[in-house]
Length: 404
Image (cartoon, helix red, strand yellow):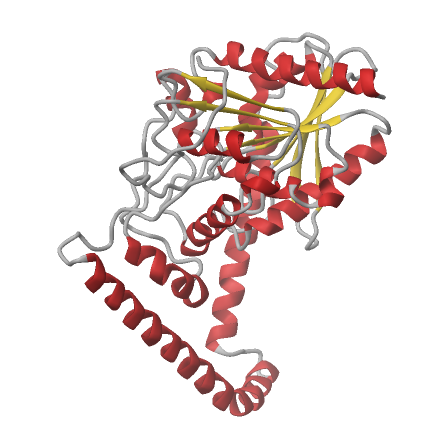
């Protein structure tokens, strides 16, 4: 394990864009054309899609008047337009799926062994009036030394972090965890994220609730993979930064590239035209994320883990946030600890090193684990990784007492 930091660097081969840890966007076109020719094709497709989009909007506006009167007549007869009926069916199916997932989320065990840990599940109303499924673990003693809020990675859910939560509560830390929009027991189409900025807004809502219920208790944020990218961007906002003692990033998705340049070129257009469309070529099982066979089996047999092909808007959001963060590393001032496995094939460990070298934070640490894969808290050495995180938070709390 390496505990240093030092400058960034590039990687000769580009990282494949993944759906966090469960799927991969495969190349749409093979490299049979030159890069310049491909870029020309991308520009042409971009222009074509813009023209089609404008044409479609014009046709919709032209039909709007006649459809309004027709819909009124059909509604009076108990009918409704075909599009309206289709939207209602899709909405009903989505709501039924949310109810199913929420019931499953409630059934996820909240304790491995009975150690007196207090726990609860609850719903929080998010920034867009959406219901967010959340979990709480608290130490047996009433007083908490600090609180860690866990933001899971893309396609997974908060209930997977039970073991780490019990490790934290045994050391006097309270733990909150939130399912993103479209994940776990929260509202939204499964595996679909309209905007990663929505997740940041929901995190702020949860932080406000936590601080109101636990005044004066120092609070940390932990984000895994794409959740790490979300947490890092959240810390760039001063009104969120001031609420945090520090952040922890495990395998953060800081440098994510499409499988082929043309995918990145057309992604913004497809994101607008067909945001929920799924890349059928995505690999269901994806790249190995743990060296523990039991952990892999548990993950991919979990009905709350999304294993379908990545949705267009979700993929575009990952690319957009990755690009933003790579241009904002020097703006990072929050105390942070970043942990990454050197054998991670889902997110780039060199990007974590680059973050460490570029960030303006006075207090920052880097841990590189030789040969470890993506899901650090589900590797065979998960307790060692958890102890490193707890040790860093202990150090930040000591610094708080010395300077406070």
